[in-house]
Length: 333
Ligand code: C5P
Image 1: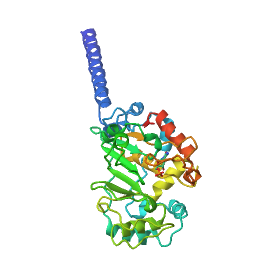
Image 2: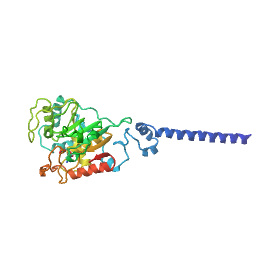
Image 3: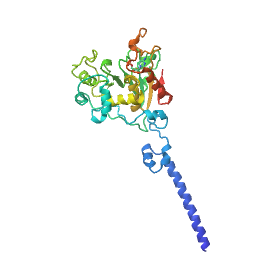
Image 4: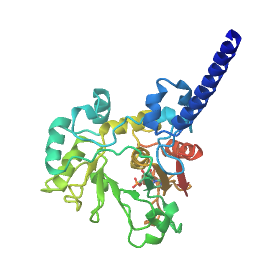
């Protein structure tokens, strides 16, 4: 009788263990299909899940996905804020000091930005990746290598199309497309924008922010280190000003102090890495003499004036190639 009871208890225990083991397996299957934030919570108790790669958006691969490239993980800092909001926390004192030294200006950032945000609206929140969304962006540089490329339709198929400086569209639609969502500029490279296009100011100096306020209102500033456009046609409620701290981040982490400061093109590209899930790059690449030639110009006599000056074109090209090699961007030449 005792023996039977003993066997019964043993069988019961085995049955209990089998059910428990089965439900643990089931639980782990469920855990592996949870959303990243849920996994994060679970990770605290189940470190084994840390190695699991989580797709953060619905594209084939997402910029913000971890684990794909160690080099990328060392350079990309998801905490950097690409948009300047005018708040003190946007920029640390060291970055501010460096940025103020790029090109001379008078005044303080506080005064100038307060005035600027009386003219323009505050920027939108920077969206974070979502699992049910794929933000596809095209970044279009101004290289002469776009001429004859027939990339127009492909560029226009992206939901975000970033162009820059004096980029010309009319007459070049087949090669460069005709859609633009964001246009990067600074006073000396300003053009009028079509309605709906976001003006993205790249402020290389304090005066650039003063110019923005002026160019979208009274037009009193007509001179920086050269004559500049007094008024710019653009929607002042859709302007974004790139955070000066973002310049420092690109200089420190991406171009790694090559060149005195990074170019419009590389800042626009790194900016795209922070607001997009997938980035396609068009129109980057100097000519065989190392000139940044433009697709809309006759480049035959381009000459040394077009040399890349304060920027290190070769190093920036290396960064772009590395991003491509690591599968973080698509590169169209
Ligand atoms: O000449 P611009 O500054 O307007 O060009 C915008 C950006 O496009 C540059 O900062 C550079 O990154 C890229 N570019 C390039 N090769 C060229 C022309 C421009 O990579 N031939």
